[in-house]
Length: 323
Image 1 (cartoon, rainbow, N blue to C red):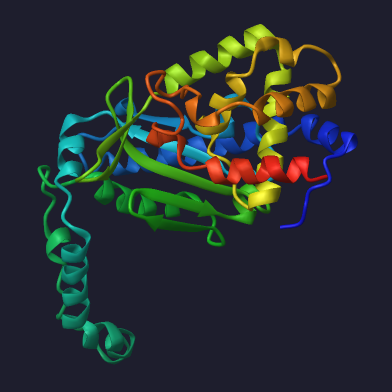
Image 2 (cartoon, rainbow, N blue to C red; image 1 turned 45 degrees about the horizontal axis):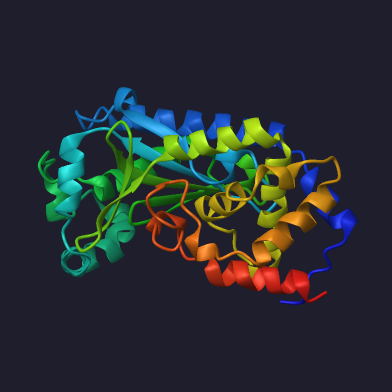
């Protein structure tokens, strides 16, 4: 991408972006849709209900540093030990894929000719139900099964022009008529133990513990110490990172970096001057040694929750200094 022209006007415009009403309205709608879908699903799965489900904002929604390019990202945490255990026993993808492919091939003629046959006469022959859908088994129902069921349930509470996509335990909802143009909602279905949101990566890695409460405590501490300039700086770095890299920066990574900056750097009313002071401070600091606000025993280079943004962040800093 081309070098970004980091002017004072540009920085001020980003810092003063105001979208609280839009965020509040979308949050309310997402909560309503998910709650309705979970309520519907609870009629099928006995250990899932509104009482043991919590919809937790994940990204810029936590700090309030939401900008025009931001996406609404949530974790739907389900507090149930059985679901957590079942997920770690997930059937390997390839085996699951072979079962689905086998079913589709076996039923190919009836699937292809279903409408044509229906016009001629009613048939007593039904499609063979896939093995994994034939009977609900409480010992096998996992996060990935729940995500599929939620996809079907959510479709009942959005307009026909909206779409719900699925990828493992992630749901993505896009719909101009429901949410407005360029609005994207992402929901990760995860386990929850009352403290940690537990994202199951794979058998080798196991569960990744995400401590939202600790993160919120650190953010509130910084806000209490330096005021709203902290959020403004997060907005600025979010916007610059996106313009340079074309993707949003991992928020735990970015928040950890900005949190590590001395409180004195945030003093003043000229946000452009504050931004320059912080950029100069970070340019001579070893970012890999900064502690994660998700886990204060790990650095941002070691905490898997922080993702891998060092290359993108360095690229952004180089673009800033190239002007």
